[in-house]
Image (cartoon, rainbow, N blue to C red; front, side, top):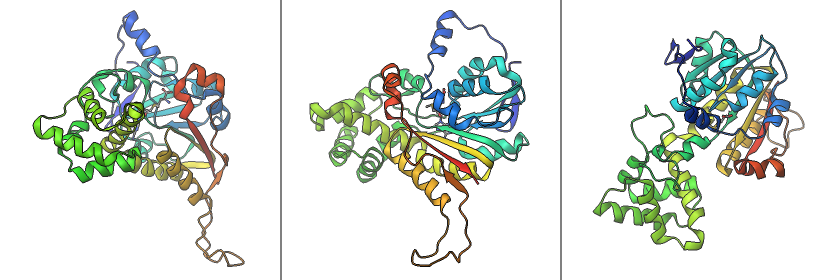
Length: 334
Ligand SMILES: C[S@@+](CC[C@H](N)C(=O)[O-])C[C@H]1O[C@@H](n2cnc3c(N)ncnc32)[C@H](O)[C@@H]1O
């Protein structure tokens, strides 16, 4: 038994297994965590505390937190990607008695805490988006750079992936997804080209979709447009913004006073959502601004600790290009 991995309420051991040297190497490079020092300094305020890593991924941030903890500190990790949890379990094996991993969407964090008989936690980390592993392996279908099936499901138990969106959504639904979640100017032309192409033959791979986009986007803008189209489909397939809203709310409901929530976002839609959520919970008063004093009695429950998002330094961006778009916002529960 390695250490408890709980899934759908049950707890099972994933067992020891020998990793080949090659596999070990792959797992070490599963994901390079961003801004680890910043996470430690903003989030790790109690060495004996209980921390919830809602996007535990390969366990890079979790490992750094565990190194900081005393032997009484506890880390609860969630991820909806089974491959992430396998890599994470291996990475966190030295702390097996202090860690519980859960294979679930982070919107179900309250259920996980109830299963673990934890009411409040001292810190919550959300490192949104995809892991390097998800992007780098073609078979997950997240990237236009690596050929693979049109999938993009973070949770592979989910029925429908990007193939379903691309091949069954109406033209106006596709335009909406690409425009809203990708902020892509050519959304209309791309949606039209998708519908025209799939009338002849289903679009079933990342390369086939990239070829359709290439037909209607200027070559000079192609990579940026492809990144936006793929991002928009990923957000739609995984209901990313809805799930984030639910997790932020459930998260602050389970934060101990003085406990902190740290969120990394990687694109403006996520960052805007997090910024607004923090603001709304800092000032919950609904009195008109002209009132000399509050009469609604609704008190804020968060204190924003980062007025502006914290970003990575140049040296880190050089080593880890993914850090370039990372924005960290932190708030404290009152
Ligand atoms: C950027 S990676 C996290 C990397 C991690 N911080 C580390 O140090 O290795 C994001 C992870 O969040 C997971 N994820 C994204 N949305 C999720 C959700 N709604 N519920 C659970 N996990 C989610 C992804 O599967 C992915 O493994």
